[in-house]
Length: 121
Image (tube, rainbow, N blue to C red; front, side, top):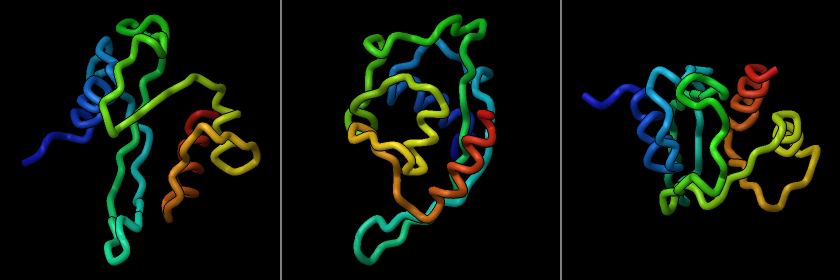
């Protein structure tokens, strides 16, 4: 048996972006979404993604960490920045350009965005 999605998300926060001050209980489940990706020419990857967030401020994270304090795992993330949710939504939905952001293009993109931005409203 594998670990729970909550623990996998928590481990990812610690290992992939270096956010070490949060606890598993800080993660709030947001939604679950089916995603399909064309991995390679003859391979379609289908997965179910559990999406979590960590709301800041909270006791374990009284303020957002400085980007320079985060440590990105090679191959998982190369850079990060803070931005208003409304700006991210405009970029994700193609209403605003952002050459320095990568937004996944897959069959679950619209459903994912709809659920994510509904949550943050």
